[in-house]
Image (cartoon, rainbow, N blue to C red; front, side, top):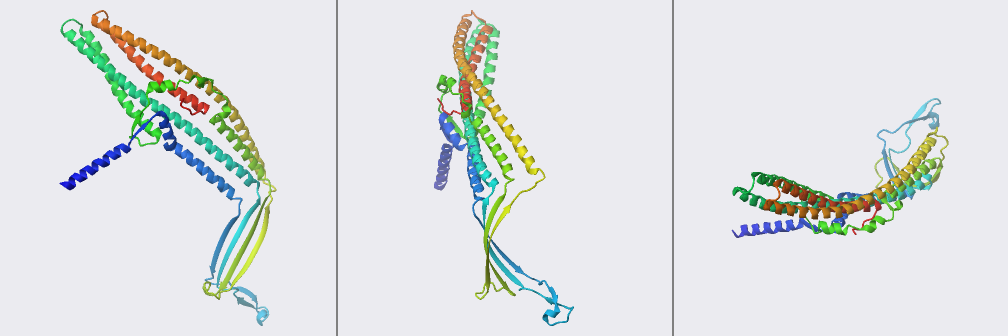
Length: 448
């Protein structure tokens, strides 16, 4: 019994610790910082930089001394026979003697050092490796911006779902009380049945909306967990409030932010693409230049009729060699010329792409500023509309129970209030999201 109790307590402790490990709480900034470190796309972008750094060294190393060793062992199962005039050995003229040259077994060991002296393509390759590393860093920067924007959107969607559920539950509580009072009045013969039915229709719609909002809440949390790079079902707790976050994200100075597109990541990427095309053109041109290489090698050879190479008295004969080779391209039937022209065309395309990117970025910045400004204006407008809708609904509720207003008028006021509530929540989310979009275009990452 005692052993069973200990086992149960141990399992309980483990489960509590596990649940604690699976629970994480975040402010918006903490969520962004966490995602930049753990989001799978962001981690792969960081790995791409590491791979680019290794590729840069790989390219550099091809122009540094290369040392290779070679060991070769040969065993003639049946030695090759050569025919020599027999008279060399005292034989008859016109006859041939069968002679096998060398020993049955041979072992050679060679070490060779190769060194590039001049190769135009190697010099271009070094420049290209640096540009490729820069492109990888640009990709990482863009990925981080997109991850940040995704986390902000996902975080806001969770807060929206939470607030929607709270409002719907509050509306349902009020409506249930109204329905209960109206039902009692109807049962006493002081109210029409239609009034009860109107409230029932409204309550049914709210209950359906609450069920849908609850399902959307689960999906919103799962989407946020994916953006953060955590397990799909991690118990994530958000510590920021939607309305407070909205107020923090109203930064009018952002509307006057510098619109220099040269600072944006998309422009940097397009610019680096143009540089890479310039290097490809240089590479094609360099293929018409001579290449010069040098080598030094040293070798030892051993010969025997049986495998005696490990014995101390085995004779080894050394040799060494130094050489220089030059490759001069003379005629390629127009291949190099065609490749060079193709590289020129691609460079012209990259130049036009850079210009197109510049124009699009200017438009995107202007559009993002306009959208952000509109979201702030809509937020103020929807907040005023919500206050008006609350007063109108309250007045109609009072009139209804005093017998001045009809159930239809009350339902209209209630529907208008519910719509204003959702529009206000969406307006708050739009301020947060539109600011994130503008900051992404501008290549800015400050929360406030």
